Every structure is written in C-alpha cells, then in structure tokens.
Amino acid sequence: MNAVNSANLETKENAFNERVVRKLFRKPPEKEPALGGFIIQVIRFEHGLTYDDFLFFGFGQNTIRYWATGKADPKFDNIEMICDFYHRDIAEAITEAKRLRSAFRRVYAHR
Image (cartoon, rainbow, N blue to C red; front, side, top):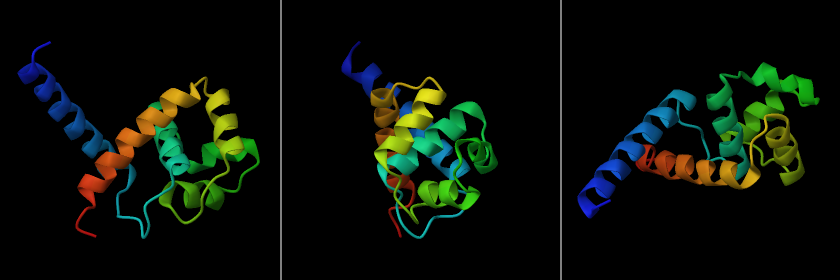
C-alpha cells in the first residue's frame, strides 16, 4: 500500500471513530473515561448493548455508566471478565479503546 492510500485509510478510520464517539457520548462527559471505560463503550457499540445489559454481571447500572463516562475507573479484573464473556480478546479491546480514546480527544479537544 502506498503512502497516499495509507493516509486515506487512516483519515476514513479517524472519521468513523469520531462518529462512534459522537454516538456513544451524546453529551460530552465531565471527565475523560479511563481506558477501561472506553473498552466498555467498544463492547456496547459492537454488541448494541445498553447499560442495563451489564446488570447480568452483578454491577449496578450506575457503576457501568460511571465507568463509561469517566466518573469512576473500573478494575482490570472486571473489564477482563466482561471481555471474556463477550469473547473479546483483551489486547484487541485495548487497541480499539485507544483508537476510540484518540477520537474522543479530537472530538472534545475544545473542552
């Protein structure tokens, strides 16, 4: 792949991730979520889940919401358990979460 095609692909991927951020964060959160919060958002987006769908794990609805919006930071064990349940490789989830976090920073840089 040449440099021009690579740059075009990156631009399209960035635009897609920014649309995802705007969909998941309909209003800007007060604080940037921790990486685990972005992983929650990735899983929610991929599976079309709501916060209520995580009640199955024994977490309160507000707990998941707080993780996803930056009001609280999840423990790695909890994120790992959720990834395992949804058959999501934790390393891939972290990579996707980092992309989403970069898009979040581009979208909400003015804050």
